[in-house]
Length: 319
Ligand code: GLV
Ligand code: GLV
Picture 1 (tube, protein in one colour):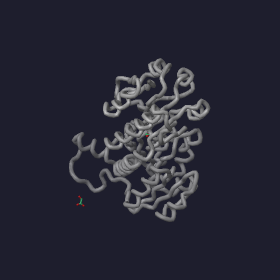
Picture 2 (cartoon, protein in one colour):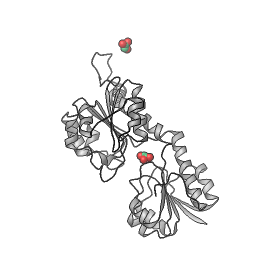
Picture 3 (tube, helix red, strand yellow):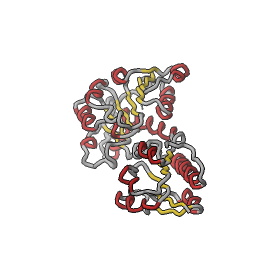
Picture 4 (cartoon, helix red, strand yellow):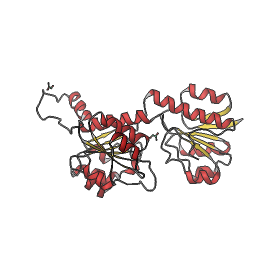
């Protein structure tokens, strides 16, 4: 029987089918990451790991896991996996594309509106008992309808956000490694070089994968190019935005606000300077967190693991 390590407590209905065909070891917490030392101690004789985006499957781990042949990652992003080493060592890996596209695009748009229209600030204001009555310019924000949105990374999620933007009569600019001519023709989205996108957009949405090339893609120089009324939204990976530069830009009013679902270090420290700013809406990495989507993600990974256990080639392979 193959041995599978699951690094969290996942809903039982997605683990039972695995138990029937494999020996399963689980971490007992749903809300807490399996400690690194525990993870390293457990991988000695496992054939497969069912990982989350917080588990680094890197050289140190692979060196201790001589039998490892498969990693199924409960995320579409896979910057936590040392993919080059996986290729070198013949280790398969799979992720969860497609099933989370809509939920993530919905959240991106929700966060955009929440940030532009100061929803969290307004709700806190009401609950704090500060609401004295309707007031002409109170809690006024940035208009979403008819604004220009600039999407960095026009993949599956980027294009789902762009299609939602059309419902708000927004002009859609995008930047991507490859031009998407079919999108330009079909929907009227317009390609821009990164600097031009930053200069022209009212909303900049980061949706590119996190790689060595995109580390701190948005830094001091890029933030200075943005409009002073612009809003930055990041639902991709924290490391794409230089948080020190972002803090300074928000403090100095180089940009107007930021909506962040991801951070350089997660969970973000409660004393992080960004959390002192009223013009930051911060969420705990929940872009794909609808019940349906999370279930679809579990199912996608489960099927990949069952296929691997059957000695077959799973779908959604990264390596
Ligand atoms: C979430 O961040 C994911 O990559 O699926
Ligand atoms: C606002 O509530 C309005 O009626 O304009």
